[in-house]
Image 1 (cartoon, one colour):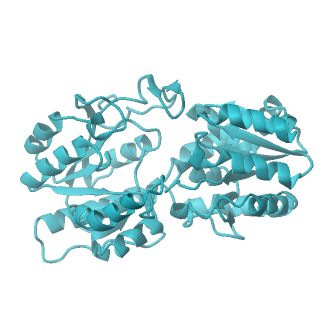
Image 2 (image 1 turned 60 degrees about the vertical axis):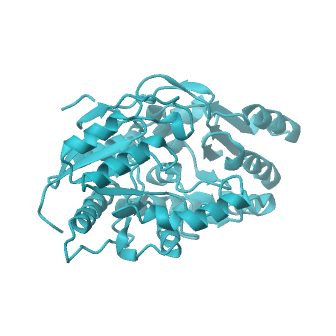
Image 3 (image 1 turned 90 degrees about the vertical axis):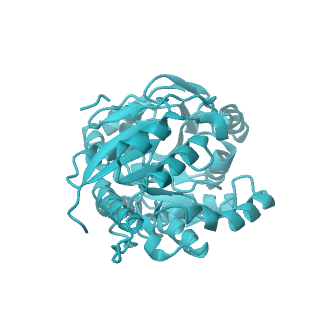
Length: 421
């Protein structure tokens, strides 16, 4: 790796609680001179999130500890191509004399293409990627599969280095014909130190009392937006079918399925064993995770969910749908959790019975889960980012020898998800 210091611009759609800690670490990395440009400030200021069905403002610092700026958005702010239209990125990149631009907006936004063209004309290395592990879209439409299969190989060759958060995404890029040395595994992580510290400060007994849960109860936790593709109703039905005595199912999250979950719990006769907490802000989450015994995510589409990292850092084993391939790096059956076939409620119920019926095994799996996160942390993330930038800059400058991109599991990152120092 070069000893050179790189001037880097990170272009992000908006401040995210998972990305801010990474930016803070990048800002003190000797190899980087980091500048962050936000297309909107949603998340750092109150704004309506249609998926949460609520006004959201995260209660942890998002704009502190690194240099950032806000480029005015002339788009609608909607989840559409013109939702992010930030023409100010053009002059920022053209005049900024950056060595590399890291783009996290996604190619479906106009601002991505503004940044890409500005970088190319400035002979600036351009890095972007995807967290998906499959060509099959969430809605399963065949034409989208054909579109991706045809155009994605050309799209990702526009990157001087493709960044991916998991081995599943790495494998997808290889299947599209992207050369291995053009791909960097930059594993998507959470702020392990913060989660560990907050979990250690929490009072498990007090939290469980607040939830109406006794010490002898086993708590199954779901944390995600209550949307159809997260399949919370599968978990509700499996929990009812499992019929494990002294067990409680806790839902964290808000969304369109909340009323249906409530009514079906009543129909199944398990209302007294179900808690629907709604949206919980970041600072309160570690205590709730630490009060649980098992984390379950039954999604049919969820490329690389941060909640798996959150659960494992807090010492929870994870019962994971087999569609969440982006977290197979972490959830190892029989060691840190189990994997079940998505949509198979009977199989999920059987897994719940097996895991909840053996408290000692739950404890062992949870300890293994926490230990696994020791090498899936911001430290590995930032190291991989620096390596990816080094590869991209060398390639853009036409150096004969380009550093090899790492695909080792101990060298991961995908960055996700203020004060100007």
